[in-house]
Length: 431
Image (cartoon, rainbow, N blue to C red; front, side):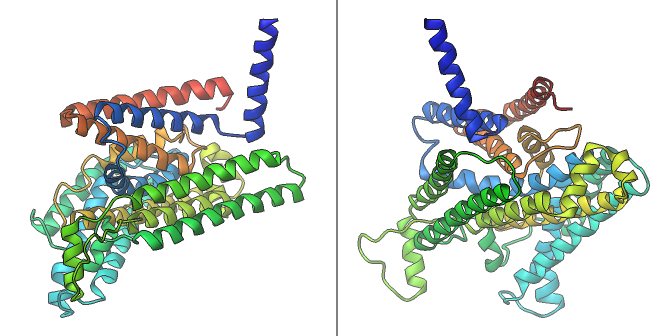
């Protein structure tokens, strides 16, 4: 009787999971992330899950997460890019020199001119796209393995960045530019709630539209109760995240300086939260665009088709060589955007910016479920992988673990993630 009841309970649980149609790998990643956060929170006596640390953890994750979304496309096409950290440094150096020397002095715009930040960012994006496109051309048209091209790029672009700045730290950067760094640019409490509500509505509308489209084409759909549960989870996650960031109060001294700059006096007992950083909003926009590209565009379908079977893709008429150039150029643009976030957060360009980011970016993509054999990967998985990697490093730093041992742990986690991916694919029958 007990065995029959146990089998019945197991079937019921399986039926619920099947109705929700959840990605088991994603569930495993979320579970690992939750366990990791709870463990570090326990070891640090509750300091890890404070609003302040979550805010800092979030803005520290953005730079790697942006590049990880592009690394998904690179790895899906059965390539690799080891130069992303060095390319970030070169783009950062170009933008820093543009803000402090080229635009104010050579072109006479003057420090603080409104056009300095957008022109510098445009120069960085152009640099990233050009370098990425050249590396993609070497891989796609000349047939040089991506490992060799980008390994050479790692050495070349890291030292190009050094020569552009003569090995000096360049700063402070333009105040408008610094708004994309995190704590120097946030929405505030009210606008953050507005953004959270808009994101929640967008998520629910997207789920409803997707369900309607599947029904219109006679595809199977989840039960209504399953859709409702997933909608509530999504809404709770978005609004809960906003609430946590709003709970991190701006220090009283900083508030006083803000009021003084406006010619006002800080009211007694007044407090305000930081809210959503602009860099996080940039990540959300990039993740949305990259997901749409991956799922809804011809380019995205070509990327996954090429990764699944390059020979078949070429025979079907896909120009796989030109596709490789586009993928690496896109990776270069995302490196430039990451350079904006990273240097703006520091408020200056330093020679060691982006060091070992290639390890973190590749690890984030692989931990997020991108197959090194090519053909499969998700944008949201890569972002979650970046968050796991940053949480691991941040937690170890709070505990007092030395930096060399932190890198040892990160390397071990990367190898373990690949092993888990191999075992998962063998079990599920994926190639």
